Length: 103
Image (tube, rainbow, N blue to C red; front, side, top):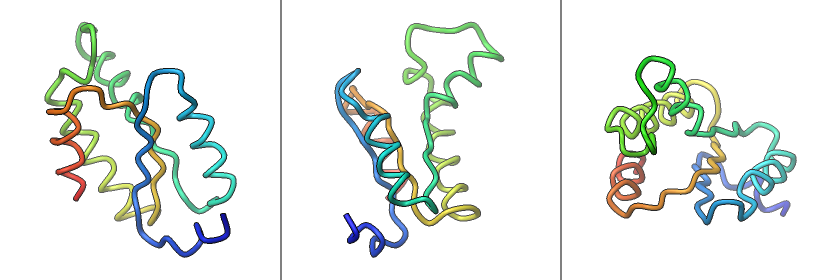
């Protein structure tokens, strides 16, 4: 994994089934890339639910998807070249919107 040091400015998005080990893998990657930031978009959803009644899935909220992209871009611009993001994006439309916004 020494090659990880040469990745530069990247977003490592860990997508997969619930309970598959994304958070564990993110922690291991962070141990090997201590200058990276582990950014969990679930925290954005929890923040939104503080201001509005919770729904079944915050990924359905257009504001969540918009803020996930804006926060990731701001973190990269101002704080870290590498982000590690453990987040399942189940719906194709959400994945396309978010990853397209990050491209």
